[in-house]
Amino acid sequence: MKTSEPGYPKLKSARLLMKEYFSQIGILSNSEMDVLSELTALTRLRKGDFFIKENQVCSDLVFTVNGMLRSYFTKEDGEEVTYCFTFPQNLMTAYSSFITGNPTAENIQALTDVELLVIKKEDLNELTSSSSNWILLQKFFAEEQYMALEQRIFSYQKDRAKQRYNDLVKQQPKLLQEVSLQHLASFLNITPRHLSRIRKESLTSD
Image 1 (cartoon, rainbow, N blue to C red):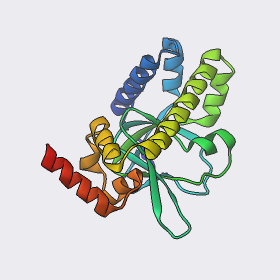
Image 2: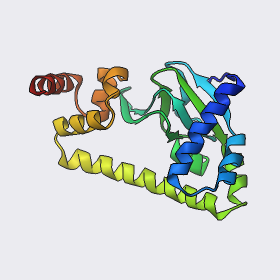
Image 3: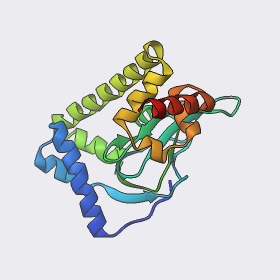
């Protein structure tokens, strides 16, 4: 991951955004959020840079201050399958690798210029021993990961492609501005041609 250190005013502003994010979850105390903030470093990725690549071990948890990330894996024939987009003010990591310490099977790439607050796994492990709230927080994120996966599986099984597209655009309208047709089609598990037809139908019906 290519990094640079922006100035302190930006770091302070980013930490305030992250504190607001954790405040909404409602698990950590103010003092615990302050401790976490002090452990973070602000880093930049340029468009096209990678947070992590396949076969690397992930030891960082990041909070996206701004910009957008794409998570994908590569099939044996070289096809890239996009399965997640990360938007501003959200947490992101290569979750399985972060938990197990094993090499990841995924790639996480910046779709735009991105600023990230980086939290080291070793620092989080130390915090876990200081308060049960950190264990509750980890449980919360594990449940969030599971529910997101379940929702995605159910959507593939019961919703038509057009419904999946409309739901996604409603939830994240910036997708149309930031994400290429190919990446969006891969995420929806359809061909770019099929997606073009859906988009045209949606514009006609509006």
